Image 1 (cartoon, one colour):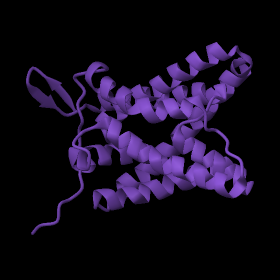
Image 2 (image 1 turned 90 degrees about the vertical axis):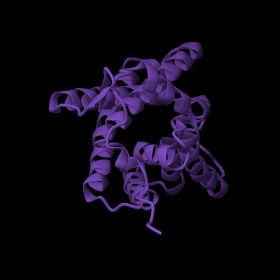
Image 3 (image 1 turned 90 degrees about the horizontal axis):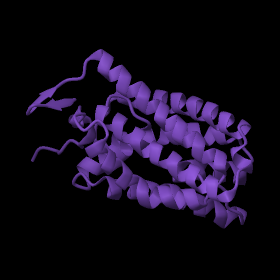
Length: 233
């Protein structure tokens, strides 16, 4: 939804496609940058990596399983059974995984893992910042989201009075708990590093900042999707 001259306007199909493709590309690009540095993944990716390390099963399996489970949790938290939204969450997860894989491969082949530590730290921060910008854009479009980011949107507007940092950190706590549980049973922990801490503490603030300053006329649309239904008394 656009806000211009005191009026609200629904996005045209062209506008929706532009914002959606642009934000999805940013999300894949930023994650590819972060993963290629090997300085710690975002918490949910780290959770899947630790499950894969513990069980010996492919990480892709746990990334897919996470999408399905979080999409199911979104039904519970929003108190709405919306099949289009459920399958849209899963579709987004598949498209995101494909793009992130392409960018990760490109950056690894470009030699990012062998770069000096100071460069990788900067590259990681820039990548995670780009992820936050991308999330901000497609959360405001709010038509089809990654299930994890959809959960953040639901928590933000239904439980935390619009606070992106509180919603994002609450979301990430569960993912961190998964990694710590794997560590308890396996004795080792992977994919948790500087980048994970940066994402945990800063990504919510980056989203809130982007909401105000990146395409500021784009405001949260389809808000009924981001609020739980309140039972009638």
